[in-house]
Structure formats: C-alpha cells, structure tokens
Amino acid sequence: MGENGNGQKNTLTIRDNRTGREYEVEILEGDVIRAMDLRQIKVQESDFGMMSYDPAFTNTASTRSSITYIDGGKGILRYRGYPIEQLAERSTHLEVAYLLLKGELPTQSELDQFVHDVTFHTYVHQNLTNLFKSFRYDAHAMGMMISAVAALSTFYPDAKNIDDPEVRWNQIVRLVAKMPTLAAYAYRHHRGLPYVYPENELSYTANFLNMLFRIGAKEYKPNPVLERALDVLFILHADHEQNCSATTMRVIGSAHADPYSALAGAMAALYGPLHGGANEAVLRMLKRIGSVDNIPDFLERVKRKEERLMGFGHRVYKAYDPRASIIKRTADEVFEVTGRNPLLDIALELEKIALNEDYFVERNLYPNVDFYSGIIYQAMGFPVEMFPVLFAIPRTVGWLAQWEEMLQDPEQKIARPRQVYVGPGPRDYVPISERG
Image (tube, rainbow, N blue to C red; front, side, top):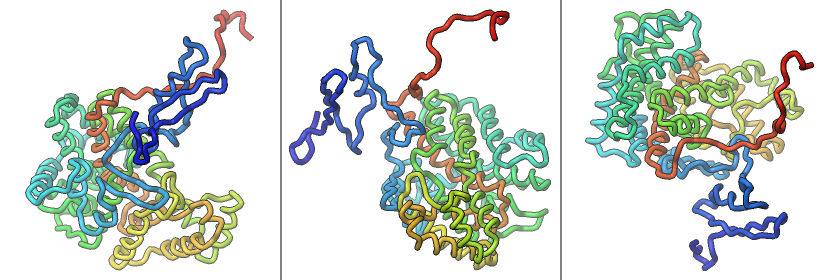
C-alpha cells in the first residue's frame, strides 16, 4: 500500500466492534475504497463478509472513467478535460462527438473524415420506414425511436462482434449518423407527413431540421441561428458521466450485447420522466403558473410541499448548473429569430425570485439544464413528445463512449449487484387444498 505526499499511508483502518478486529484497506485515487475489501470483515470464517448498502447507487463508484468530469459543488462540467463553456462557444457537435469517442480533439483531416463517414451513413434501410408505418398515428416519438434502434441490430448482425475495434467503430459511426434520421421519421409519422430523406450536403443539425420541417419539394433552409442553437444544445447534452441511462448502457453492454440493443435500453431509461422528461415538466409548471403575478403564491406552495419546483436542483450539482447559464444565452439568440416565448417572462422572474430567497438557496435549488431547454425547443417548433428524442440524439455519443470505455476496462465484468434479502426464512410447501 502506497503513501501520500505527507509520508502517511493511503489506507483506512476499520474496527469491527463485534469482534474487536481491525482491518486496513487501501484508499484509491478519488478517496474511494474497493467494495470487495469489505468482504474480509467477518464474525465467523464461514460468513459471506461485509457489504455496503447503497440504494440508487448514491455513493458508489462503479467505474474509473476518463470521459466526463463533474464537480457538482463548484458547478464544473468538462469533456475529456475541456470546459463545457469553451466547447459550447467554439466547437461543433460532431467535433465534440469525436473528442468524447476518441479522447482528443481531432485534427482538421481527422474531423473531415469523421464528418464524411457520419454523413455517408445517414440513410437507413427502407424496411425501417415500414416499421414506422406500423405504429399508431399517435404513438409517442420516443417509443418509436427505442423500437427502431433495437431493430437496427437485426440489420447489422456483425455488431455482435464487440471484441473487434473496427467493428465497434463502424457501429458507433452508424448510430451517430442514423439517430437524427430515425428521429425525423418518428416526428413525420406523428404528423402524418411523408418522410424526408437526408440531404448530405447539409450540416448535421441543418440536415436534421430539413428532415423534420421541409414540406414538399420546396427547398428548406434552416435559419443559421437556430441551426447553431441546436448544435449548442447537442453539445450540452452529449454526456453527463454515470447517470441513469449511461449506467443502463454500461450494464447491458457488460453482458456483451450489441450496441444497438444496449442503446435501446439506455433510451428506455431516458424515456422515464425523472430523467429525460424533466424539461417537459418545466413547461407544464410554467403553464400552470400562468403569469408573473402568480409566482409568489406558487413559491409559497412549493415551500409548503404542495408543489414541486421543476427545473431547479440536481442530483450532482449543488451550485448553478454550468449548462443552464449557456442555454440561457442561447435562448436569447433563439427568441430573436422565433419571437419571444410567452413562458420566458415567467421563467426569468421565477429564477430571479428563487435565486434570492434563502429557502431555495439553502437547499441548493439552482436552475438546471432542463429549466430553459424546453422553452427553446417549443419556440423552435418541437412538440413536447420530441423533447426526450432531442436529448437522445446527442446523448448517443456519450452512451457509446461509455460503452466503448467499459468494454476496454479490464476491471469490468458482467454487472451483478448484491442484495440484502429481507424475505421469509425456510418454509415447507403447503398443498392448495390446505391453504387459507
């Protein structure tokens, strides 16, 4: 066991007061200990050994990752070491995608090749259009997307060969390329509109907007401000370390499932309203408030636990979500083009009051990324059922980066948490005629 810079051992001494024995375990980088080191703590040699009990994994590290760094107390978010503020201001989504997937920012030639490869793979097999046509007219876009991504695994059976780096990269490029196309198909199906095929001379986000909103043969030119705003939103949502859906991606991937199946599972986790549906909940809250005049009464109801303040607070961030400040600036640029969303005034005043009241400050209830994103999406013409889909498109990059890292980590194996059994003890079977 090593020493720290002060000549002290990097260990933790644990005393078991049941037996009087002491155990010394190593403290690893990041102030963590290995959970398996607890197994040596036993009363009887035949005991299973000590486990930690951590519902929802609130204080358990399941991996050592080099992808995304978050310091929730200071409001810091970095991709591969680069501050999110710099990437959102100066980069593009596909450049950030390359960074997350490869670990370094690309050279110009590397970026050109990656953009070319992604663009080349934007089309999907024609049979997938039949899959979309089979859904009810009012099917939720996210449900259609999950089904379509799972179906992709049947079109690329070679994806099961996850031990081959070249095969893995081919599937990564395909998924990054095809997600906007599938999302556009889901939107057009819901609207009863014919599908629009990719226009590969357009940028990643411009092509997506074209597939969504073009009518007939008329050329569609997305406003460059909206095109860039969507690109920034994609950057902000690209990864967020070990959240619910990323953990799902890793858990399914640990069974060596193909990436399409694993990603469909991650999307299903994102579909949950506690994860990917938060920005829709913000919109519903703002509509329920109705006007700026009603905000004080609403906040009083929040304090009495009669209402929930949606879009404030975060499981990780205990300061202002760094993505929220970027997205707030993006909102101003979008509304210059689309016109001011009437809900914005309510949102701004709600944020202003909440940030100046001790009740909310003491509880670290600062705006998060969901507080403004839904307002922006609505102003750009997206229906609420598309909100989780707009989350899933960029997060595909993060999920795939997490999946690739997990597969190459020699410490990882198939995920299998322990449980603390609290059910009945041994008992004999009773024939049904003798029960009750």
